[in-house]
Structures are given as structure tokens and as C-alpha cells.
Length: 138
Length: 304
Image 1 (cartoon, each protein chain N blue to C red):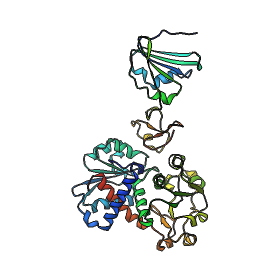
Image 2 (cartoon, chains in turn cyan, brown; image 1 turned 180 degrees about the vertical axis):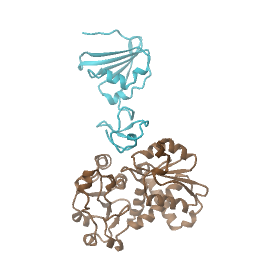
Image 3 (cartoon, rainbow over the protein chains, first blue to last red; image 1 turned 90 degrees about the vertical axis):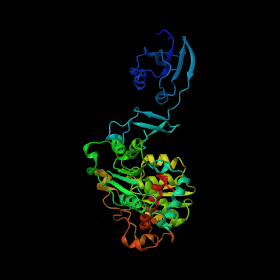
Image 4 (cartoon, one colour; image 1 turned 135 degrees about the horizontal axis):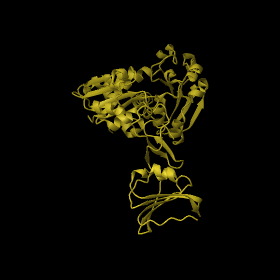
């Protein structure tokens, strides 16, 4: 069993599918923060068998909206003084930016690379997002 | 309402108000001759268009305003590599309202995000054409005196026909509208149109490739041309001959009050002899387009 030290204050992103931790780290743009961050891969999980985790120290506010799109199984715990102070509800974000990329070759984003790829949630049940420019569904 | 990008930007009440204003203008055009005096409309047409651009320009001139702009991409700074966003910012400095046609889908959305004046989408690729839809709705209202409880057939190129997509999306909001889609297999409605509008609104619809069998059921027949300029080579080779040419013979079984519509330009999908039939409404549509665009310009410029 692999165990890591509890963090004093920060955010623990738990129940990430095994092997997906680094991908989520990149999506959350955690490489842009200077907070100490731990990515844990393939640890035992009663719920999932195996899981990944991300522990981000000394930070409380970070845009975690994308997590809902990434996986609905993930839990987010806010840690204060080594204890869980709050469990963040994870929901599908209404909009996601530069995560999905429009594949419609007729979309304006295909010829103007500086435009942000923005998708709007159009079907919560089926987790469908549409490009805000051309309505193409990904 | 600041912009008109998609017909769904407008509520049914707003559409009804625009239709009422257009009818008032049509009945008394003299009352509107100076409504837009000292206002400038920029027509940014990155793709060639005759009737839409002329309709907007005629609309603005009949409101007493002025028009600046270009009618093809080669005449604009986009040929030098300028982005849509920058063009919108720059043109906002010169005009009170922007009308944009662009071959790429979503370009008017980008313009509206960056312009400081209202933006009207005058057609973006095969995507949306909301002012044609307003034109169509005004025509249906004038011919049928209602915007609900009818059966409408869409015939021709339903894949690339943006006028069809926009009209379907708004008619889905009206009660008791039944739709019949007539097209070759490879030119059927794209998935997103069906998924977004029709299935979501539980609209009763039929897809077929047989025009003759459905004509007697229709209150409105919306013809479209095959948009060959948007076809791939494979589609082009299999679609050179249009199987859906509306003839007087085909109209024999149609209702006496059928309303035949077409966004124009027509190629060969409606034979010329049909033009003199009382059911042909497509040239009335053109005139209606000018009045509804006048109403839209007034609304976006917040002029009473």
C-alpha cells in the first residue's frame, strides 16, 4: 500500500480514474501555479480498485469547472488544518474553453487559430457540448 | 437584443413584433423614410451575395440611412490577413450597425464578441441565415395569417441549405407544425439539426425522397437549390441532376392554397411556368425580405 503525507491546507482531487491524473493536471493548468502539487498514480481504492489523486497545497481557489466534464466520479475536498473542511460538488460546466476543439472544417476556428475554442453544454443528460460558433456537437 | 446571429436569439414575441413592424412599414413606407437619417450601416460581405446585400442596402436607404462596406473578401483587409475580430473592432468605429456574411460558420459570433455596435448575421457558411428566416416567417404569416398548425415540406439540399436549418429551428417552437423533408440520401438534414431542434422539441417529421407522394399533404412547400459550391467532388458527381424540379404537372395534386417558397436564387428547381401560378410566393418573399430587414434595423438601432 502506498500512502502519502496529509497536506496541511489545500485541495485534494480524489477518485481520478487510474492513469488520468496527469491529463487532469494539464487540463487544470496546474503547471501554471507555483503551489506544491503531488500527483499520485495507481493507488488502491475501495471504491474504484485503483485510482489517481492530485493534492495541491496552500491553495483554495482554483477553477475546477472542467472536472465535471472530465469525470463525474471525481471528488474534490478542501483541506484546512489537515482536515476536510468542505466537499465541493462537481457538476458539468455550462461552458468549457480550450479543452474541446471544434473539428468542423467549416468553423471559423479552423482558419483563425487565435480564437478560443468555447463549447456550451446543450444536453446535460448525454453530456453533449456544442461549439458556440458553429453549433457542431462534440 | 443587441445582435442577431441565430434566429433563436429572438423570442417568439420579438419575432411577432418584428413582423408587425414590417407590415406597418409595408403599408406606410413613407412614414419611415427618415427614421435612420445620419445612421450608417456597414455591409461586410466576405462571400459574394446579390440579393441579401441588396436587400439590406435597399432597406437602409429606404430608412434614410447610409451604407458603407465591401462585397467580396478580396476587397477587405482579410485578404491581408486581418482577423474577423479586428475587422469588427475597426468597422465599429465607422458605423452604427454591421451586417456580415462570411463563408466560415460562426464568424458573425466572433464579430459580435468584438464589435461595439449591433451585428446582424447575413449568412455564415452552411450554418445560419436568420434574416432569411425572418423573411420566410413574414411570408408565411402574410399568406397563412398564422405561424402554427400547418404541414411544411422542405425539398432539395437540406444538408447545406442554411435557410432550411434556420427556419426549422424556429418553427420547432410553434404549435402543431408538421415537417416533411424531401431530399436525396446524401443531402439529408445534418445530425446536429435533427438532434438540436427536431428531436428536442418532439416535432412530428418524415424523411423521404419522394416529392410527388407528399405534395397533396402540404400547406407550404419550401424549395431549395442544390448548393453545389459546398459539395465535395463525390457529392457533386452524384448530384448533378436535380430530381426535384417543381413543375405545374407536379402541382396538380397540391392544395389550392399551397404556398410555394424559395429563398432564391433559383437554378432549375422550379420551372418558369410555375411563376404565374397563384401558389408561387417566392418573389413576394423577396419584397418581404426588405421590409423585415427594415424592421430589424430599426429594432437593433432602438429607433421607434
